[in-house]
Amino acid sequence: MLWYKAWLETRTRFLIALGGMTALCAWRVFELNREAPSWATLSYHYFVLRSAHELLNMMWLIAVTLLMMGGLLQEKAAGSISFTLSFPESRRRLMSVRIAASLLEAAVLLIVPCAAMYGVACLTSPAHSLTQVLFYLLFLASGGVVFVGTALLASSLVEGTYTAPTVGAGILLLCGNAPKSLAFINPMDFMNLRNHVDATNLVIGPLPWGHVTAYLAIASTLIWTSIRLVETRDL
Image (cartoon, rainbow, N blue to C red; front, side):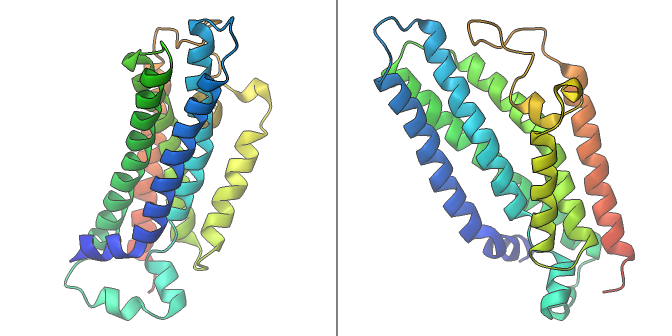
C-alpha cells in the first residue's frame, strides 16, 4: 500500500519527465549526427554523446528535485497528514518507502534516456562504445545522488510544497556557477565529466572511485539526516 501511495504521488511528474527526457536526449544525438560535417571523425560522434549526456544531466537534476516534492511535512501543510499517519507503520518506514520509490524512479530516468541515446548513436554513427555510456551513468548517478539527498533534506526541513524545490533549484544554480577552482569538490562538475575526458571526447582513467565513494557517503548522510528529522518532528 505504501509503495502504491508513493507511485500515485509521483507518477505524473515521473512519466512526463521520462517521456520528455528520453525524447530530447535521443533527438539531440540524432540531430547532431545527421548534421555531422564531412570531415567528422570518431571524436566528433563521441562529442555528440557527451553533449547529450550534459543535456541529460540538467534535465535529470531538475526532474529528481521535483520528484522529491511532497512528503510528510508537505502533507502536514496541506492538511492531509492524518491519513498517512493512520497507516500502521512507523515514520521511518513511511519515509524509507517514499525515498526508495523516488530513487527507483530516478534510476529509471537515467537508464532509459541513456539507452535511447546509445541506441540512436549505434544507428546513426560509428560511436558504439557501451563502456563510455556506462561511464556516463556512473558519473551522473554518483554525483547526482548528492542533489537527491539535498532535495530530500530540504523537504524534511520546510513545509511549503514549493519551498523545497526552490531551495534545490538554488543549490543547483550555485553549483552551476561555482568557481572552476572548486571543480574537484563540485558534484555538478563531476557529473559533467570535467577533468575526466580527453581530446577524443572519451572518458579517461583511472576512474575516480574516491570521489564516487565520497559522494555516496554524503548522500547517505543527507538521507539519514532527513529521516531522523522527520522522526523527531511534531507532526
